[in-house]
Length: 472
Ligand code: DOR
Ligand code: ZN
View 1 (cartoon, rainbow, N blue to C red):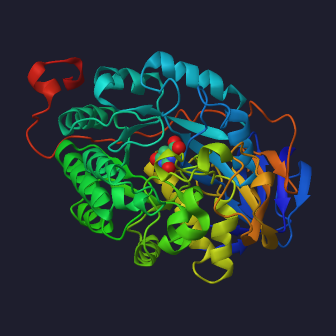
View 2 (view 1 turned 30 degrees about the vertical axis):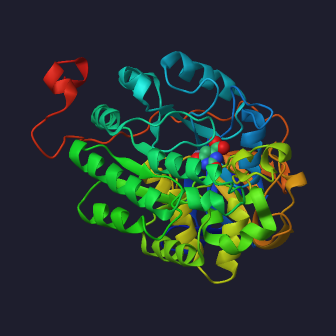
């Protein structure tokens, strides 16, 4: 007797859609095959007419605990994920305190004890914790996050010198470095000039952070990655311009991946009037030509994946007539899948391509493949059961996040996850959170590190020259 069979659904992979049953035992998928050929199970759930996708892997969420639990905590954040068909999240280190030492990583792990879905944890890569990076990796950080530009939490961005050493160390750990790729000094300069001149309107946010901040940061990060052998990931791609240094680095063989978020596909400068400071996000939503170029790059593979930068704040923190005083970002982990399935329904991308950008590619980039990101024997039974015809209307008041404000308010969606399973356990069933699942989520531990992180030139790393442990 095995645990569970999902029967009658259509299993979606990167290459195909097949009507197949899925057999699950001990949290893993044990068989995928023709209806009626599965082993006997204690529970059989009929999912006829629905599609089975590997649960989404969102490598960019802010769950705010410790420090800002009035915005979100691990229970509310992972409840939102479960409702959104997201079965694994990677959580960012700009909490209070930030996740920059082993003790702080341990505190984050304790906060995450109540997680409903699986998770990875970012350790900070900053100027003042270069000496902690190896210990963070050894203690179980799943990746590093480097803020090249300031955003919520105002963590100082490292100098290029500190970044280079950070990349040298990260390369040796085999962990990916995710980059908030906006150049701090350009933005600080421009914002000060704008503020001094009395510019306070929503579009001034873009004036302070024009496309060049992303182009400069992505270009610099790419050459540092190439030099050190560090694998890197460009977070929240917002501009047409940064796609070029990204594509060029890929063509040179740099291990670099990129994500975008739904807001950069759906909103443009035309929405700033209507949405005001609600749309304020770092990096900013830009022009229609940027959204169009990012769409193309998501189809062609230059942009590898969709993430959300789930960044909840309260309505009071978001709404401000002075744009500089409004907190940046909004919740996204619960709405990503319905929004992107709507694009599938409109014929803008295939369901298989959605599986690639929402699950398979993030799993590969962050070392979770082949255990996660696919529906196949041996993989974790992380599954979003999707009704491609279900129509819903996004309403912040109904979101499970504590951040009850979204630029998508009133937006209609077509297609939604009607059940979510994490390692074979229903955490969401029939569009309702299953009670008592807090603590089911686990940190992903057996992630695969980059096998060969050698720099492409004679080793000139500080560790090699100074003879410190990292050189070994
Ligand atoms: O708008 C943003 N908000 N962008 C980020 O990169 C961070 C985030 C936050 O933590 O609020
Ligand atoms: Zn973020």
